[in-house]
Structures are given as structure tokens and as C-alpha cells.
Image (cartoon, rainbow, N blue to C red):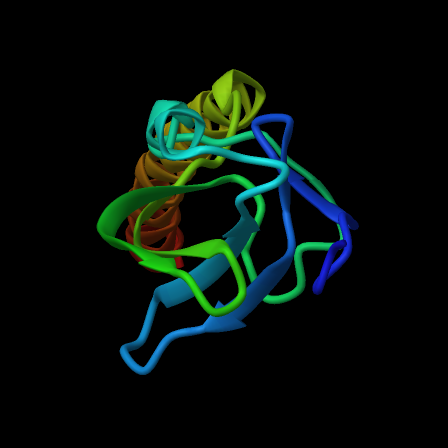
Amino acid sequence: MSFYGKKCRIDGLPCGLVMRGVVNGQYQLIFEREYAVLEQIEAIHWRRPNIEGDCGPLPRGWGFEVKDIQYQSYNRSYMVTVQALEQYLGDVTGYQAQIEAAQAEAEAAQAETERLRQRAELLEAQAAEADETVIALY
């Protein structure tokens, strides 16, 4: 008989309940003994687990470190305490290409600005020379 249900799966293993821990980034997960044994819980790839279903506050795409595993005989379950390590952002090569393109555009705009500044200085010098010529002719 299940106390918690099986709405959440972590690396394919049914997890009955997910709760926030007392420390920031810490979570407590309950695995019922009839669906999971200690060896299966320890075999979960906690650095980047595959989280399926309604796992409540447990963030998807994050890596975790197991802090503690306790067996609770009164409800025949394992309570696993995990600490969030890092957030996995996935494949960011597309964003890197966008950043490189934006940097290239910024460099081109700076070069164009410098070219226009030099052109303005040249035109100012020519205008000053023209003024002197007009004054001299007048």
C-alpha cells in the first residue's frame, strides 16, 4: 500500500513526496521501500537527474548532492536529503553565436563611429581653411 503515490519519477524511480528542506537549496525526497531500494536510490545520477511528472518544488535541470539517506521504518520509506549544486542551462551554443555576432556588430559600429569622427574633423579643418580664404579675398 502506497502512502504517497507515484506522480514523480527521478531517473525512472518513483518518488512519493518532495519537500523543501530547512536550508536554502535543500530538498527532502521520500522513496517508498516497495518501489525503490537503497541501491537504486544511490544509483540515481544526482549530478543531473531526469525528473518526470509532478515533483513539486524540485527544480528540473539542476544538479544535486546527496547529503543524507535515512530509512524510516514506521512508513517503510527512505528519506533522501539533497542539496542543489548547480543549474544546468543546456546547450548554449546558439546563444554564444548570438553574443559573438552582437560583439562583431558593436566593433563594426565603433569603427564606423571613429571613421565618421575623423571625417568630421577633416571637414571642420577644410571649413576653417575656406573661411580664411574668404576673409583673405574679401
